[in-house]
Length: 222
Length: 305
Image (cartoon, rainbow over the protein chains, first blue to last red):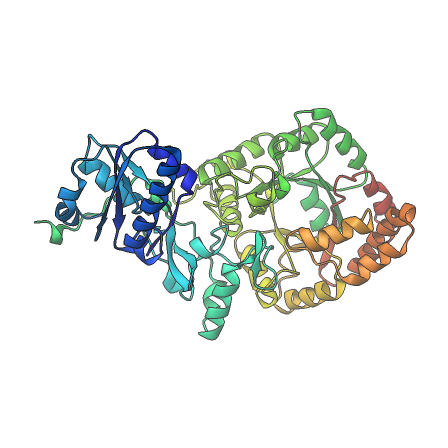
């Protein structure tokens, strides 16, 4: 899923300064699951803003809506009525959701309340790990199901660097060495031989480096 | 392929090679590089020029290599994958050869989080293995990565190509395999991480010999003179990939403060003498960090000149 984290309250306040009719728009998909921008987080932020505004003597209306999936137009259609009549929308979705609303409402400022951080998984309650950089050419099949692009701090393809020690990365002892994980997985699978082959330079054109990406599914186009 | 490299000449003639490290300054002052170079000139076969080591911005390694070349040294130009994509890397390889640089050392590079630009965007378009292959292919076939055009033989970069190895990093069992891959990708010489843990290095060398790798590559054992007990502790705890056993720290600590440098040099000399006796070790690489003046003394005391 897409993992995000709500921005600090002071940054949100600064973004909203001057607006009188604010709509907080949550998203019921990824950011809800990672407790960054679902209906609960929308309610919490609304009350936080309400209290702060009261204290400062600022008059502003703060409405709430949570769109099931902010990155899809048809879900926005359902919530369109709630979106009307505001002088600003603060989206609590990921960056894709924010941009979807911005494109849909060209005359309204659409502001982000969440920092979209990565594609990852829930490791344990409250702890999320980055697992995928969406490079567009998945190599997991050759690396025992551990991504060298994401899980190695240097995205190395041909084995651990000289900074791997006791299973942790040179950058921080709290960061596991992705290559130790690859090695352990392939060892358990009896496939250490795959590591003897050289991985040639990767084609990064399918990743972000080829420019903003577009996926066309001819079979799905109506 | 034979190049104009002095280091290659020494190694291929069966000599025990001595290289030292020269860290470029954190400024644009060429005199610092020249001064360090002159200090090392008569005592080593080649001088490694580090590439923004520990991710601290310094004078560029190619520029500093050219300065050293101008005063008659044989620089080993170090190049890391952290800061350059394949366009810049291949361009720099052509440029280095054009400047008369004869040796290059292909490295991944310390992560930028260690240095003075921790907010930088890193590159790692290639890894050190792919960098080796790219340098070898440019030299031997005149071809850029995934490009079928050929540079004419006379205009190809004639470089003696090296890589690093850290026998002390994990997973240990993978280290000899990784070395084999580096050789398969064109590494002709290897300079190792600083050796303080000789038993572990000896174990690694055995694994290297058992795979027949010592006959395929020249291995230069890395050594570093310790300046003080504080430095030993710092290296143990803070420097990535270092293995400084407690006995070493105890030995340096055991010397009075004003004698710790002397003890560090003594330990370094002893290590070199032990390394010379290990089968498959073709030379030493002295990394006297910001202490280049110690190199002549070490070389002499170890009986290398």
